[in-house]
Image 1 (cartoon, rainbow, N blue to C red):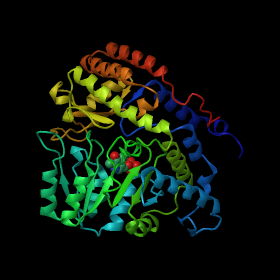
Image 2 (image 1 turned 135 degrees about the horizontal axis):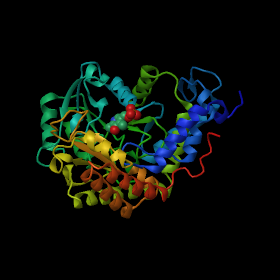
Image 3 (image 1 turned 180 degrees about the horizontal axis):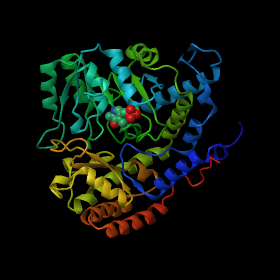
Image 4 (image 1 turned 45 degrees about the horizontal axis):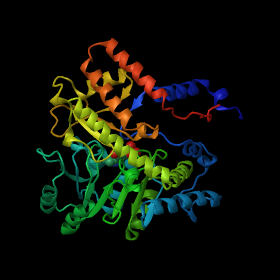
Length: 420
Ligand SMILES: *Cc1c(COP(=O)(O)O)cnc(C)c1O
C-alpha cells in the first residue's frame, strides 16, 4: 500500500509524462487552459482528498471536520479579499455546476433567462438546448451586432423590456471585449431582474484590475478557478449577503453532496498566489501578449472578430482569408505544427458548431511560461505560415521544429517530482 505511483501504476504515469511532454513542447493557445503552480498541484494531491465534509465550516454533517474547516475558511476569506466580495461559496466542482446552483437558488423551472447566444460567444450553461439550462429554463438569447460584432446595449435593453427576464447573465467564453457591468445593472434594474456575471474566463484579469470589476454591480458572480485565475479545476460563487443563504443551500444540499476538500485547499493556495504582486504582473502580460498576438495576426492578413481584443482572447474569422478552410481543419493543421487552438463559431457563422469558420486563441498559458510580446509576433508568424502552407506536411514539420525550439526556452514544471 505504500508504493509510489511510479511503482504502483507505471502505465498511468506514462500517460501523465506523455501529456507533460506534449504541454512542454507545444504552444497551448486555448484561452480557457492554463497550468497551475507546483504548490496548487501539491494541494490537490493532498490528504484532504479523503475527508467527507458535507455542509459548511462549523456546520457539517460529519464529525472530524475541524481541520478541513480551517482549510475551507482560509479559502473563503482569501477569495473575499481577492475580489472584494461579501460572500463566497468555494464548493462548486465546476463552472457549469456553479451556474446550475445560481439558477437553482434564484429561479423556478420555466423562468426566463436573458443570456448570450452560444454561437456568439456564450457558454453551454447559459442555455444550450442539450444542457440542463436550455431544458429547464426559458432562454431568451442575445447576440452581437452584425456591424460591430460587439454587444449592443440598446438591443439588450429592448430585449429585456420585451421579455422581462427574471435573470440576466452577462459573460462569455469567446468574446474579446470588455463588459461594462454598470450598464448591465441599469438594464437589470429597469426590468427587476437579477444580474449574474459569469467571469469564468476573465476572473484573473478582474482580480488583477486589468478588466472592469463586476462586484459592485452584480447580485451574483460565478467563475471557474482554472482559467486565467490559474487555480485548480473547479469554481466559486460570489454574491451579496442577501443571497448567501440561498446560494449555499443550492450548492449543498441542492445540487452537490460532499465537497472536494483537496480542491478547496488548492483554491485557497491559488487565491493567496493571486494576491501577490507577481500575479498582477502576470495578468498584465496576458493582456499585452494578447494585443501583440492580435497585431501580429492582423499584420499577417487575418481578420479578427471585432478587429482585435481587450482581454486575453481573440477569434480569427477564417472566411475573410481562407474561405474553404473550416475552423476544425485549421485547428488540425495547427496541431500538426505543435500549436494547440480551439475551433470556434464566429458570429453569424454559416457552419455548424462542430465545423465552424473560426478559431479561438488566447494567451494565459504562454504568458504563464514567461513568453512576452516578442514571442507573440513569432507565434503569429508560425500560425500564418502553417495555414498558408497547410497542404505541405514538410512545411508544417518545419514550423513544428521552430515551435519546439521556442518552447524549450520556456519550460513548464522544471522540477516536478510529484509522481515518483
Ligand atoms: C468555462 C466556462 C464555464 C464552465 O466551466 P466548467 O468548469 O467547464 O464547467 C462556465 N461559464 C463560462 C463563461 C465558461 O467559459
